[in-house]
Length: 148
Image (cartoon, rainbow, N blue to C red):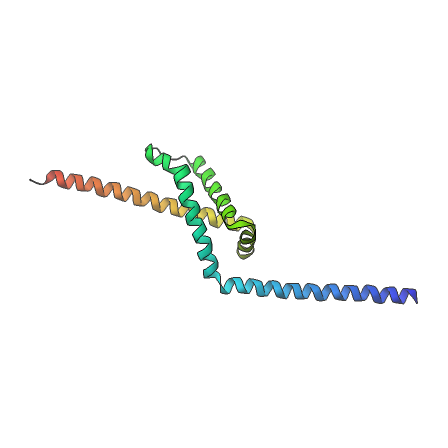
């Protein structure tokens, strides 16, 4: 009798665990589907923080290279890019960080996307600066050739 009661109790417990696991999986799928449906809102929120972090990192860590007219080394650039990713994650907080890690699949992929944003933004800023300097130098050449 004791053995039968123990078996029923263990079987009930196992069934309860299976049911709870199934419910948890369904809720997780619903939560992920919600993230996918609201992807643009999530990305807008992330982009707001990335822009803010980029502006701060640029002023604190990169602007000095522009002012001194020196090129940033690849090693230093990689360090700053990693600092940018860490800074973004601090700005969004632990809860949102976990949401984005879940959305991107894992933390490494999320960090990779943050660093890619930083690289792209830096390259675009650098190209824009070069274009401006070329434009100004072209204007100087054209103005020197004109008769006053």
